[in-house]
Length: 91
Image 1 (cartoon, rainbow, N blue to C red):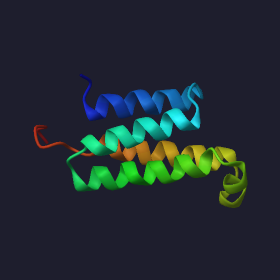
Image 2: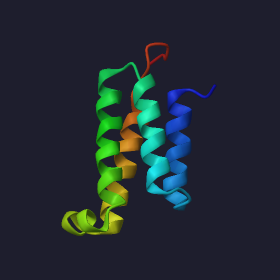
Image 3: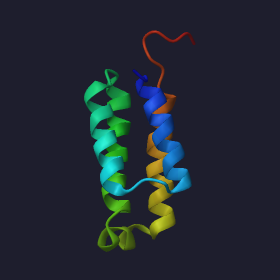
Image 4: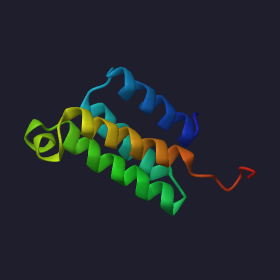
């Protein structure tokens, strides 16, 4: 089974290639959120969920600077969640 970081990396790559729809991203982020044990990582995954909801709703992304800006914010939140060190990682 892939680790949380591996799943987040795959999700980040798919958003960069624009190869995944909003429902799939939201479902995967919710699944990853339920497995994350680090509070900061959970916060960033939750942030990514919020940005995914905004990004995939034309009514909402217009109010946040456009499609590209919301995609960048979504990718940044995913990247921050990936960057969190786990308990088993060395500095």
